[in-house]
Image (cartoon, rainbow, N blue to C red):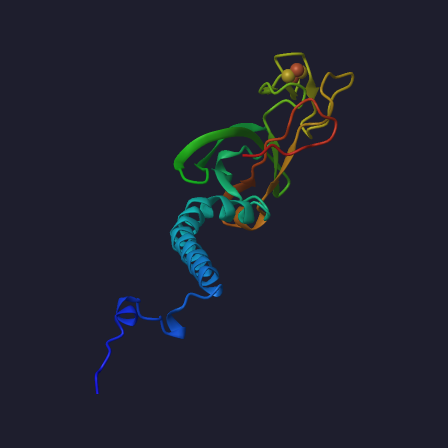
Amino acid sequence: MEKHLNFEALKRPPMPSPSAVPTPTAPRRNLVAALCATVIGLIIKLVPLTAGLAVFFDPLLRRKGSSAGTKPFIRVASLNAIPEDGTPVQFPVVADLTDAWNREPSQPIGAVYLRRVGGKVECFNAICPHAGCFVAYAAGRQVFQCPCHTSSFELTGERILPSPSPRDLDKLAVDEEKLKSGEVWVQFVNYYPGKEHREEKPT
Ligand code: FES
């Protein structure tokens, strides 16, 4: 029997199997894969960036947390350096200055008057509350006197009226426990001048 070869069938390309036929969901899968790759890439880049930013801002955050507490006491003088008769003496206040990233040791940050009253010590910021000049102790009149606009203050820190100063001298806290061991430690604060009520300056 004579066999006939089907040349038309041989020329035709083979029919693809059903599984090889592209379906409409394939482009969607590719898009999802691309999105996943982008998201993972972003995460990989963001992790070290976030860690770097956390390290950079950490001192600022710690400083913010610590400023919520009270100011520390600073050693200003030995008790022996203050006359027992109640005469006020001016002392510089020296402290370590720190900002978020730097520390400068032993910097002058102001001055105070210390005065013995009975067994205690009174402390006043030496800055005049009028406009910020340093007051001097006028031994002859036994008052604090400002050289700038003639504000005067009693030894208790009270204004002598009339006065350009809007308030009394700024009284500061003294650590009474340290006094027992012969040292004067003061909670040093600078206040804005020109205001009737004390408003603490940031340090
Ligand atoms: Fe002291 Fe003006 S600054 S009186």
